Length: 399
Image (cartoon, rainbow, N blue to C red; front, side, top):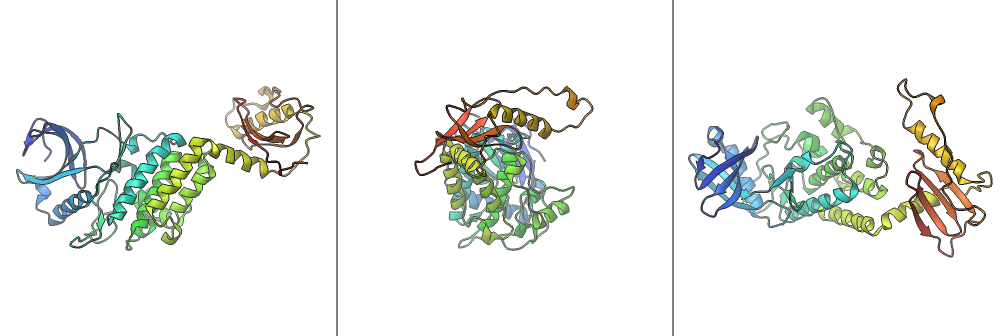
């Protein structure tokens, strides 16, 4: 039975329905006593007599009550009124992360400020003996005003500690449900979750890896036409690197995601704190510009030294790069005819007599040119002309 807007539940007046799931109905309400907005997570009357449902609600209250972290939703109370049990929690004015991921993925400067506090919140939960077991973008809220991240929905949490008993029952948005069996939401499960094996904190790290992949690319790493096929993919398939799906992402970020998604828990990050630290270091490098420079060094140094006497001017190379870009974009459709392609030369480097180029190469997509001269290593964006330069150390010689 849904609660009507304007109705009362104990000391709370219902303002709006926020959502509904297997663990209950969520409402925005006004705390009449304190005059503040709260979120109510209500166990409806029709299932209030189910001891398992009530136990899970109580377990969520136990889990959240043990946590005090700026990126975890705050629990106010566990109450009963009018034959219904419910939690009162901090109301987060924002939208789920699942609604804020564009089809092509988030830019890195937007992704990392969200991913780091999520990992930090999960690390805090693990340090308090709590494994979330249902991490997914739908269980992360991003506030409207400050873009602060809040992790919520600890209804499937596994608790470790005196007097805390875990009930292995499943629920979620699109889960497989079996009493004493699989726990979690299928697309974000770890392999051990998918097989119904015992889980520890490293299972949450796999789920975080799935989230990072989706945040970066706009798609999930494991997909299928049914829950069974998704589980099969989780157990068997190795997803592509995020840098393959979305060229331009730092290789270091791709390595972080790949490590999170290892099938063997021993090969993942062993703590969420380690993952948080890796993401923070990546952000620091990105903010300082060192990440881009490091990429330019890798691109240039990895090239075989090739004299460009045959390339009298890199302008010709740029034209070839533009032609390569046309090829990379594909020739599907009858409206793209090679005869109609106009190729224009454009010089993209300084006078080769004044600054001779020792070697150069063009990226496969034609967007970048990497080259070296006496001044250093350069990575130039063909479209914009922007150049990133790393000065050559005195001991580095290209001759």
